[in-house]
Figure: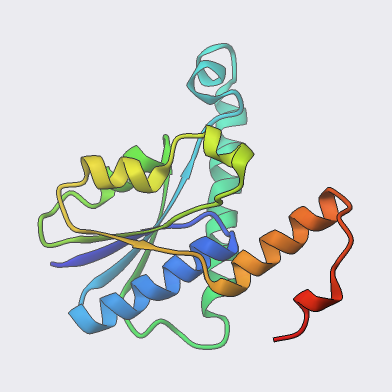
Length: 169
């Protein structure tokens, strides 16, 4: 069976990728597999250094609840119209997505993530997927509204006054 696999976090960019993946799944008559990757506090080193099974179970439960919230937010108004499967995976996002989209007939959909300078220090999930996936990868750019929102947020953070000429079309 063909699948469209999409990674989500709950950000606006991942919600845009989720909606695009749902549209691709409808066109391809494929199952929509929504993946949320999670890690133990402190990463893998934190998982080895004394977190008990109870703490890991709480992390897993929180990830499942987060996935439910994301799906509820994305499809509250209208159902996706395809078979939907949610999956929470313990691991890094890129590796979890590549592993979930193993088939050559699958399609992997990811968002581009934040383009803020400080966020660029983290490895890019989209780049990882493009380099390692065995199937086609669709990278969904942020919406123009998200770009404007990020710019306004940066302006407010640095307390840069708004120029009224920016408001005129």
